[in-house]
Structure formats: C-alpha cells, structure tokens
Image (cartoon, rainbow, N blue to C red; front, side, top):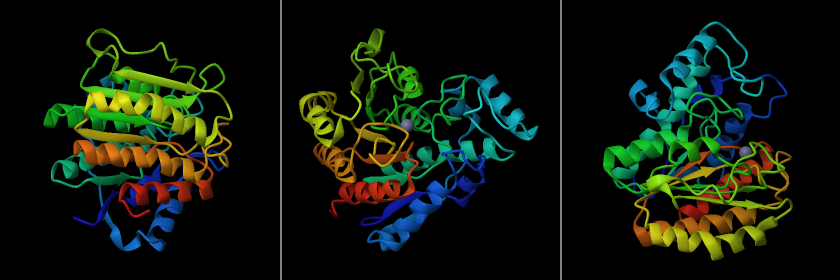
Length: 315
Ligand SMILES: [Zn+2]
C-alpha cells in the first residue's frame, strides 16, 4: 500500500438517513468521495470496506444497555434517540457499527505499516458518551479506535480533535488514562455546544495532565490556531511521544461553515496538518484521520482534500 491512501469507506455509510434539513446528511460523504476521486489524489485512493465493530469493542467505550437500546430504537422505527438532534433510521445501528469498525480497520492497517489512513465515516462520534447519543453522534468512533489501538497493540495514542466543538465523549472515555492523550482545540465552551472543554479539565488520577483543552474565543482565525500549536500543543506532543495519532478531523471551524464562528480557512487546516505530519515523521507514528463535523460542502471537501495532501506530503 505504499504511495496509496487507504480510505476506509462503504456506501453503507449513506444508509444512515436524517431528515432533509438536518446538517449531518449523506451528501457530506458523497461530496467528499466525489471531490477526492476527481482530484489529484484520485489515483492514490484505495477504498477499503470496514467491518462492523464487535460488541466487545463497543462495550469498552459504551454501556451495553445503551447499545441494545440504540438497536431497538432503530428496529422499531424511532426517529431519534437521547434528544431530537440525534436522528436515527432503521439502518442507523448497523451503519454506526460500521463507522466505529472503520477506525478499527484503519488501526490494523497502520500496524501493518501504512502511515496515513482516512476514515470518512458517518454518523460522527466525538460527542457520544458511554450511555448517551449526543450532537449527531451515536458511537464514539475515535474513542473506540483509540482504545482498540492502545489495548491490542500496547501503543501510546495521541488524539488531536480540531472539530469546532469539544469532544466531550472522547475526553470522558480516557479521562483517567495516561496512555491516550486527548488534545482538543475548540470554540469557547461558555458560548458553544456542548459546554465542556475548559482548560481546567486536565484529566484525573493517572490521567492527570493527559487531557489538554484549548478553548479559543469566537472569530479566532488561522493565526490564533497556529499560535496555539506553536506555543502549547507542539511541546505537549513532543513530551508525550505518541506511537499512533488519530485526528478527530472536524472541519466545522471553517469560516464558511455556520456551525461555529471560529473563522478558520482551508489554509489554516493545511497548517495544522503540517504539525501532524511533522510529529508523525519524528515519532514514526502512523496517522489516522477520522471525519467528525463539517457541514458546508464546498469548504468541507476543499479542506479534506488539502488536509490529506499535506498528510501525504503532496502539498
Ligand atoms: Zn463540530
């Protein structure tokens, strides 16, 4: 797979249907795949289908009763779970297991020597809690994959979450864990969903210091983001020395995306990605980029394509 970009994807991801005006729509993945296939990366893509995450790996991050309830709700034809934001359809349970399984598949490829892997999955995951769907998220794809990576291969895993919103579910999954370092940069929680992610939230017990939250004011823009990478994140990553990196890659901090007011540009995502590529090379740590938010299709697709080019060193 050298010089190839494995993309863990199946059209089954499109079977998680939401109502017509819901921002988290199948069109997001259709647009991403379309742009990637037609662009410069087109002949590097290697589409690899995922397998559903097993009940065992799901229950390491989620309460078994929540998993069963989600399945029941889907099969009974309910329209949402744990609040109207989290829409579901008959197929959503199966699709959510595939989204989590995609990250597990990516971990296995990384451990076979692949340096960069992309998981354009839906439903997204970083808000999903142990027993709660939240913020369009059903299963916590990144947390399930990071836990699998850490436990199956005994590796120290860095999760970098640059979605505009704090990944409360990932944070809580690893809050007392010193083998998984969660770094999130997001919109001021006083003004933004889900209302967590203050700098004082730093982990607990053995995990103290292994959660790093960097809330930023509205309208921060590229410069403020890059300053934070230079001043805070870079040194934190260097002292952790990750053996694997997962990006909770949300693109809703883009200035054209009305889900936040962070005012990032596509170039800003490229600059943040440069740091990840540098760490990946320095520590020989494979990078798995997992899609989270990002709802305005033009900025989403442009940012994803640029992000992947930078990760592959093709910029
Ligand atoms: Zn978001």
